[in-house]
Amino acid sequence: MNCENCRCSDPLLLVLSGPSGVGKDAVLARMKELKRPLHCVVTATTRPCRAGERDGVDYHFLPQEEFQRMVDEGQFLEWAKVYGNYYGVPREELARGLSRGMDVIVKVDIQGAVTIKKILPQAVFIFLMPPTIEELESRLKQRHSGPAIDLALRLEEAKKEMGNLSFFDYVITNYHGKLDSVVSQVDAIVAAEKCRVKPRSIIL
Image (cartoon, rainbow, N blue to C red; front, side):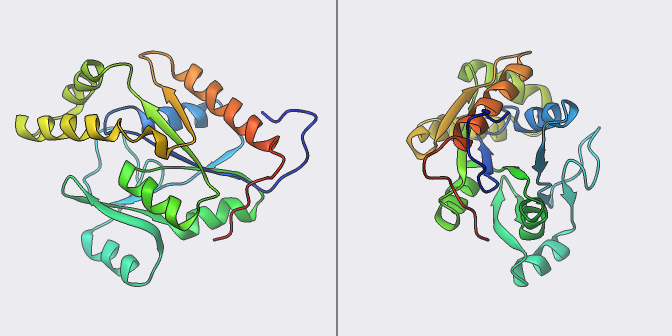
């Protein structure tokens, strides 16, 4: 992934974000399958576990009381309530990868990315974009079982989020069936960042 003429640099923190339903989980799962040398942060949530998901692998699924305890103890780098459920990025997960000298990747919603940029502006921010809003609607419908009004709200929010591209460093479009292409583009971003004249440095 690294270009051979680049100097060694500190490990990177990659922040992968994008609207609900764009495929952030699928991208990270594919990166794990391809054994990319990245530490994938497992975020915490109070939402119910979906079919096929595993606790401690896809998310740390926590009861709300446990999540609140971690908030009170300052264990999250950032946390927020999104569509009625709480999500948070455990500091310990980040520290584990960085302390090993590994590049770290974490997926968050747009609100989480904004918070992390305020705390760690030296992170690399990547926006995952759907090919069209129609395809995003189709993806959401496939996994959404709640009221139609909830789906409409998510689509409206996605349109607003896609207007914030200037906040990010890079944008990747996630075309249907092209996960390997997304992974290759993340590889290219990491390689480019390793060649910076002024390397990024993450201090938690």
